[in-house]
Image 1: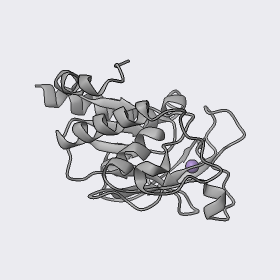
Image 2 (image 1 turned 30 degrees about the horizontal axis):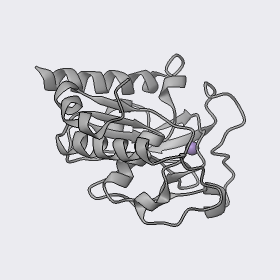
Image 3 (image 1 turned 180 degrees about the vertical axis):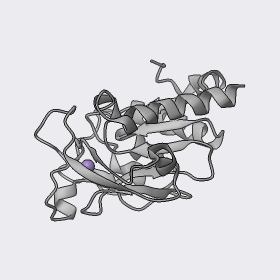
Image 4 (image 1 turned 30 degrees about the vertical axis):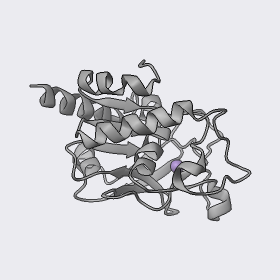
Length: 202
Ligand SMILES: [Mn+2]
C-alpha cells in the first residue's frame, strides 16, 4: 500500500520498479474525461483518490516504469492519456454478454480475442482466445494517445489495452487475480510485470 498523497509521488516513482493498480468498486468521475456524469455512474465521494491515481499513473507511464492496470487501473491508464470511458455498457450496446457476471469472480464468464503482435499476445503465447471473468459496467471508449487495443469481447467491448511505446504498459478489464489458480495466462500476466520490473532494475 502506498500513501495517497500528491507530494509523495516523486518518492514513490523513485522507489518502485513497477506498479500494479487494481480494481475499485467506484467509478472515475467523468469530469476527468470531459463528460457529464450519467445516472448509472457511481463516483467516489471525493476526488482525492482519483486525482492522486491519475497523477501517479501519468508519471509512471512517462518514466516508462512497468505498469499493469486491472479494471479501474486500466480505465485510469486510458483517461490519463486523454481517452474516455463508456459510463454504463447496457446503455451503450445491446449485448448477449453480461459484463457484470452473476457468478463469483473466480469463475470465467465470457471469451476475449487477443490481437496479434501485441504485448498481451506475446504473454499469452499460443492462446488467441481465452475466457475471462467480468465484473465491470464501464469500459474503455475512445483510446488515449498512443494506446492500442490488445483484446476485445465478442460484442466489441474493449477488454485489454497497451501502450506500445513503453516497455510494459498493459491494462486488462478482467480480474486475473481471481483466475490465476486455474488459468495459465492470468498468472503469466503477473510473472510478466515482475520480469519487466526486475529487468529494468538490473
Ligand atoms: Mn467483460
